[in-house]
Length: 233
Image: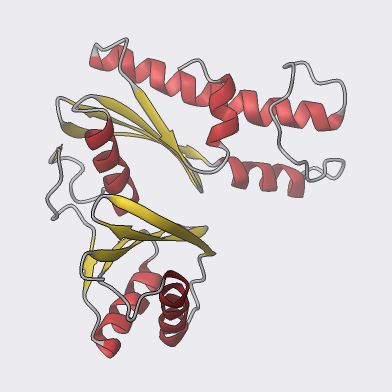
């Protein structure tokens, strides 16, 4: 129990709670992010995870949050229930440095992905995060330089469907060809190949700017597994 922690990643759409022991992730629990959730709801949610994992009490919380209302609720939870809690921010120590131009604005979600990239790949990497937003950012000479933010896949599809009367929700799969011959195929092509092209374009430009045409790329989130199958970078 002593070495276990809850690693909590609070995103705009989903929250992930990882049960971690040392460097090993024992399990990950996913929940929809609820900005209105009461403090005690988090308490019982985490107690349920403890019950599932055979833990007697809630271990230390390490929180990376981009949702202020949830951050406040978790701080109150820690205070009310006397839990140990640490918030990830630019003030933490990482295996990389943060460029001073971005240090006041960089989100905790990007910091934890950059830390993963630094540990898994090294001092040079381009990191892609396909969540509520599509974020592509660069780690060069062990310095997190910045990056680009584009619309997310899920939000773009939902916006398209809501604005176009003849389009409907489509279960996204990797299409066999770019030239779709019905509405479903055309939407899958537009989304999967379209976002692959967006990511490839940003990665290629960043590689050129940074003078590293072979710069490795690591990606996570959402539909990235399917987009990654047709991505050229």
